[in-house]
Image (cartoon, rainbow, N blue to C red; front, side):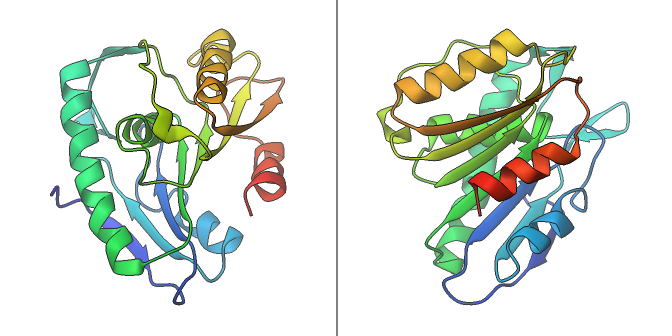
Length: 198
């Protein structure tokens, strides 16, 4: 199991367990406080990505913008799944929520595609999944919220819509929230989380 630097909040018995995954250049504090506010009784676990890209924290390597090192992604995805599973066993929650932005959304989704039993809910803010996805019946009944910008230069809208279509085809329950801007997070995305995932 990878020994991530983490921020951890112990919640009340039976409360949701929330994992937060930062974007490129973020750290374990980026969304930890937000998760505490959204789910006040929850257990919250926020790992720091263990890849450095020019000094910026990431969860897996890429060779250029939008081009992933797929071998590294496979290794890091397996490591993250190995980190998540014992946290779930320890907390015994009824819901396990992954909340990630950009690179963090991508690692959360990558884990969910391979180990769909781990997360009951995934909040993927500005995800970019540029590889072909195999059918995954284990995703049926998982809940997803995808938030994105219509003019996001990093995560093109057609790819985001393809991800939503793929998830629906697997039987997942999918909500989408779009704003007219780019890769930045905006207030309406928080409102979408409150409306769809609390």
